[in-house]
Image (cartoon, rainbow, N blue to C red):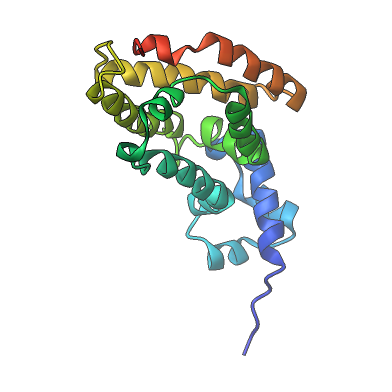
Length: 204
């Protein structure tokens, strides 16, 4: 009985990640991935159905982390918060925002693959889909603030999506442009000054 060579997997994923990062999914060459990993194409097809499934395997753990980030913000029971706690969710907090940047920094390679290199895969609209899912969370927070009389502005879901897309684009761009961590720290300070969510919803 043959024993599967598990040492192939990390080599293959590393080679695939490098190829996808350099050329994007559509132009990435499976033979080059195999050659650089020192494996045959047959070894790849024993593990994955094709190039797209290989791409998904490369970003799998990071997607789970990002899904968890979104779900945590969608699943909070806002009804248990005090009014002051609800207000604070709309105030840009530099420490919290930098923690969010740190989470993304830790997976920055995969994050860039999802944002910029995923055309032709099921993740090709990841940039838009991420902002759309965050819009769901923001609308829940806004609706709760509105219900309590804390938010006075009338914000439609379409408008909230535009605002979220603008905000998250400002989060994405440092990674797309390969900023250093020191530059990210400075960028964090800027966006915390620039995005005044409390004013956007007329928080009292």
